[in-house]
Picture (cartoon, rainbow, N blue to C red):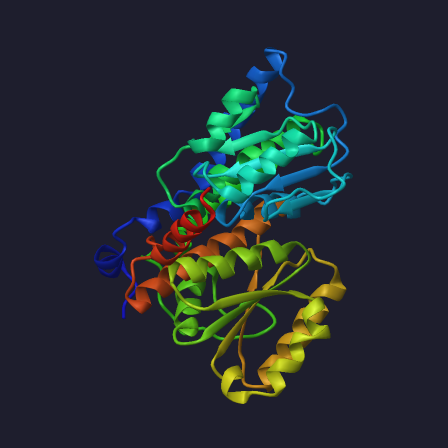
Amino acid sequence: MELGADAVAALDKGDMLGAIRGLAEQIENGYAAARRRLEEARGAGRPAAPAAPDGLVVCGMGGSAIGADLILASLPELRVPAAVVRGYVLPGWVTSRTLVVAASYSGSTEETLSCLDDALARGCSPVCITSGGRLAELAERYGLLLLRVPGGQQPRAALGSLAAPLLALLEAVGLCADQRPAVEETVALLRRGNDELGPAAPEEDAGSGPQPALPVRSLAKSLAKLALGRQVVVYGTGSTVAVARRWKGQVNENAKAPAYWNELPESDHNEIMAWASLPQVSAGTLAVFLNDAELDPRLLLCAELTAAVLDEHLVTVEHVWAHGASRLARLFSLVQIGDYASFYLALLYGVDPTPVEAIESFKARLVSVSGQ
């Protein structure tokens, strides 16, 4: 199957390709809009966070949480405890001096709303990032700072809109330096990536090795062809762990296919045993290693050796390398490749990348049972 304009027109009824291509604009516009809103709040005497916050917690699920993972991974200079909470209750260490961010694209995520209630009970003044819904209503009711994002998309398709306001917020409260140079580089890099990875890019057979076997412009389609009919395992290490989680979710939701992620070197203390015992499973697996040349050399060596072991046990192995100068740009360069690869894998499976009926059905069932 050719992964060109005809396949996109036939299957991409929800325009997931448009959302993937729009990541650069989402980051650019979301960052600028949040900076303006934060300036307005400061001018109105409504600071975004307690003075010298003693920690940071971002509450969210799915596509509303992964942006926080990526932003935190891009900011190694953070000097306070920071966590992304995917659940109903805040960590015990959260106090009224902790910066709590409630992120829900729809504004109706019950876990995030529960965390908001928990934060208010502890005397916090959470910052809300949402397109509307119940979360926006509560922000207005309690006078909370609201960073509103454009609605109308699947949460995973609004990654830039959800991530960029958090970056602007952390900058505004003094938890990180001015991020404008990193944002500008990231936006420019993603725009180039659209030309290199889009449907007009050439299609070649993928290879494997310690460095990219193919130019960037043929990676996404080649990875999709390697993933076809295989389970996908994505390995991250250091800062790329957050990207591995994103890749896994994109394969699940866009391609409706099984995928998993894990972290090196942790998986070398357990998971590596599994690949030696069931050759029929190993032979049906694609392992993707997300690498960044700026990582600790020990982590890069670990990834190289792990890949060699998996290759010996019949796992198909592929390495993908980040590019860019800033950590933000390097992480989002990897995100973009994974987004395109999962999109092309959906086309190969003959499915529209956008709908997620099973997720929506489960959420409806949860609401009916819990009565929330």
